[in-house]
Length: 190
Ligand code: HEC
Image (cartoon, rainbow, N blue to C red; front, side, top):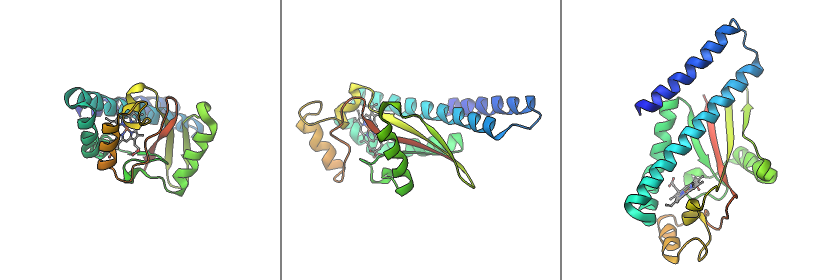
């Protein structure tokens, strides 16, 4: 947790240093670029944090144990990252496993956009009247992911498949191949 606080701290320092150079007259465009790179760092850090915990859990308890761990801990981990970074961090998917990660109609719009852009999809910062929101695509980049999001009898054993369906009766998050869009990060600045 300390590492995260230091990390956020250093981010904010570099932003304020830049603002001083411009005598406080940072243009909107500059501000948005800074927010965008900050959000990108938050996403990188959060992905690493989740991946690290996932790998540790698979090492200690195997795939089935790691599914149980994710069910118990994934929300708590993103909540604590949100607290540490002072933003709201969510993972959202059209084919969600955790019912909390289903998209609302606005979020669905960005997921559809990323899906239609394919491999060219890039993160976007959206400005509304009262806040900035950052959306970044999540891809299934490694074989590890397919153990729990892949296809039955290809990358998932029947046992793994059934265990997941037992833990998440409404699961939609299997059937993926490498490189597919799995969902997106949503970072909200309130
Ligand atoms: C050990 C099994 C396992 C592995 C391996 C795994 N996941 Fe998951 N994943 C889960 C579970 C379980 C959830 C639901 C967690 C929860 O309840 O919030 C989940 C949720 C997600 C979500 C949130 C959206 C949703 O469907 O609820 C994303 C995005 C995601 N996984 C991407 C990945 C990626 C990318 C990888 C590879 C780096 C990966 N997962 C590897 C089990 C796994």
